[in-house]
Structures are given as C-alpha cells and as structure tokens.
Length: 163
Image 1: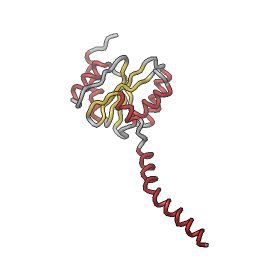
Image 2 (image 1 turned 90 degrees about the vertical axis):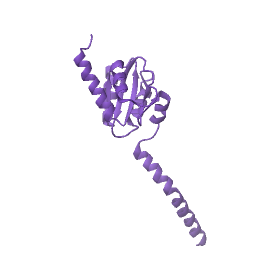
Image 3 (image 1 turned 30 degrees about the vertical axis):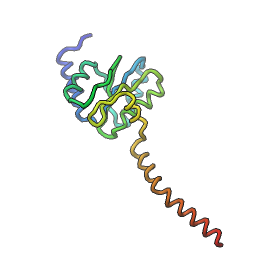
Image 4 (image 1 turned 180 degrees about the vertical axis):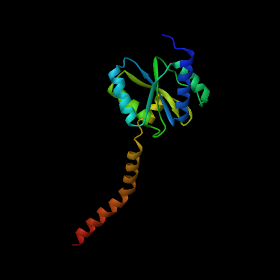
C-alpha cells in the first residue's frame, strides 16, 4: 500500500529530527526477523536508551542528504532501520551488534553516522566492540591501581622476610 504525501512528510520530519538529536546513528539491515525477535530487540535497546525506527530507504536518504554528513553514505540493501541515541555514543552499535550475534543472519550493521561522518559496516563493528563507559572507567582505575598494588605486595614480602 502506498504512503500518502502527508504521511511521507511526517516520516521525513521524524527522521530529520531523530538524526539531528542523535550522537550516533546505526543503519540496521534486517532479514527474516520475526515480530517476537524485533519486539525483544526494541525492548533491550530502549533499556540502553537507544531508539529504533524502520523507515523507507528513500525517505532515509532524503533526511541524510538534508543534514549533509561528511563522506559517502554506505550501501543500504534490503530492509533498513535506524538505531540512534543522544546519550552513550557507542550504545546503538553495541546493542544491535550484540543482538545480531543471537540472531545469526537476521540482523546486520550496514554502517552508520559517527561524529558527523558516514562510516561503513566494518568501522561500525569496530565501534560496537568498544566496552561501555562504566567498564572503560573501571579498566582505567585498574591501570592506575596496578603499580601501587605491586609496590604494596613487594613491601609486604620484604617485611615478612625481615621478621
């Protein structure tokens, strides 16, 4: 069934607003995705603060063209959705990538927009493997703590030998 021009304008406005507010956007290719899997994926993404929307590729291309991102837009074959957030910059890529592992072949990262430039699927997968911010902070604290911990252990061994 065809979409009326008014409905297309509303969808285009929604896409443009979503892309303007987003810190990062992921283009998601989905194939053979059941309604149950799509619903559970949307729930998991929304818990992480990620929004998900399925749109016509022509309307998505118009919205992307209107915003004028740097670089060449990735190829968008098949059915396409976008996932975006305005909080954690890596959350959309990480969420879709993790859920795509569960549903082998049903979901794929096609590319995205990161820091105002288009990225291809390989680059977005690289971003998806970056740990969340709290984990990165914990890793940093561990790096800072490691030399101090080593010194304390060495001093403890020296004190035990002296006794």
